[in-house]
Structure formats: structure tokens, C-alpha cells
Length: 279
Image 1 (cartoon, rainbow, N blue to C red):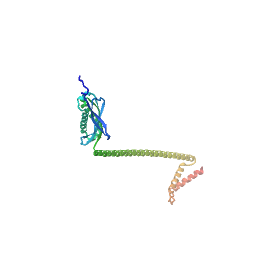
Image 2: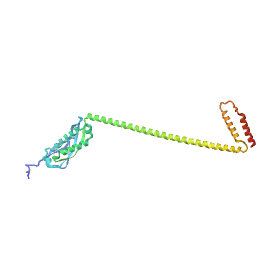
Image 3: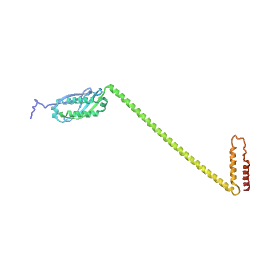
Image 4: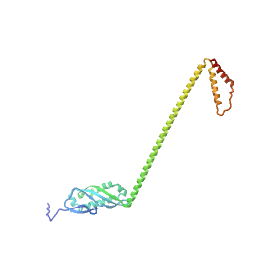
């Protein structure tokens, strides 16, 4: 058992990092020795530091680390300056991780950096009685000229993507228009085809009806003439006369034709006359 004499002796103190905002609005950090250990989760906001990527680009990174003291004895006696040790360990580990990545990978792999950094710090600070819960990369600042080039590249990529999207839209519209025109042409052709079929069927039915009517008329004429005359001579004579009418019905025809078989037609006409006279 060890007794501490008041005034002459005091408990061993531990350094604690204090953050204070200055009159200029910036945060300032200083170390303060305290004789009480805070076992709650604490946060360290490290100042920005310059690191170099694998492709030799110097960037500025600042990180946040959330940790908790779980063994107060180890935090006091296993390390002389706990806040500074955690800060320096975080900086060197962060430099090693970023040095293995190029700039583009660093900008897009914050989650990977956070996980690897937390695992490394948690393992290294375990003997100090500290548990590192999580690490967050706040900001990554590339140089101004690199940032300008990246902005131009991003704008070019966006313009390219916009042109590609517009071209794809025009292509899709042209395809849809072509498909619509083809479908319209097919339906128009089908409609015309169906119309022609219906028209042809109508003409055929009309001709059939006309032939049936003519047949009926001829049958009636034959029936009327069969009793008293010769219907075959009558029909031949009528057809003969119709044919001669068509031959001489031209617009500029000034010639009167006399059929070669005039006696035949006259005899046919005389036969018609005799039949009607007899009727």
C-alpha cells in the first residue's frame, strides 16, 4: 500500500488535448495535464497534413479519430504522451496508405482508407489501453492546377455523356419512327390489298349477276320465240347487227361498210320480220 501525502505528493497526471477556437475563427489545440481520466469516447480533429500519392501528387488531408480509453493504468504508464502518440501514429499510417494509391483512387476510396486506418490504429494503440472506434477522412484537397484540370475533365466527361445520351435518344427515336412508318406501310398495304380483294369480288359478283340477268333475258326471248319462229337465227342476226354498229361507230369514220354476207343479214332480218308478222 502506498500513501500519498497531501501538498507534498499528487497523483500522476495525464496529458489531454484541448481544442479552442481563436478570435480569427480558427481552431487551436494545446495540451493540458489533468489528474482525472475521461473514460468516455473522445474525438481528435487533427490539423491538415500534406501527403504524396503514388503518382507523385501532393494533396492535403485532415482526419477525425474517435477513440476511448478502456484501461486507465496503461494509458497513464505505458505511454508518456498519449495525444501526441495517437496523432503521429495517425499521420504516418495515413501517409503510408495514401502513398500506395494514385490520386483518382484516393479521391474515390475514402471508405477503404477509413477502414484500413482504423484497423491499423486500433491494433497499435491496444497496448496503450485505447480502443479506436472509427476514423473519418474529412477533406481531401488536391493542388489548384490539378483541381482545375479535374474540373475540366469532369465537364468534358459530362458533355460527352450528354452527347452520347442525346445521340442514343435520336437513334431510338429514328428506330421508333422507322418502325412506325413500316407498320403504317404494312397496314396501308394490307388495307389496299383487302380493298382490291373486295373490289374484285364485287366486280365478279356484278358480272355473275349481269350474266345471270342476260341468261334470264335470253331464256325469256327464246321462250317467247320458240313457239312461232327460230330463236337461233334471231340471236345471230342481233349479234351481227351489234357487231356492225361497233365497226362503224368510230369518231372520224366516214365510210359506210356493206357486209360481205349482205344477203345473209337481209335474210336474217326478213326472217325476223316474218316471225313478228306471224306473231
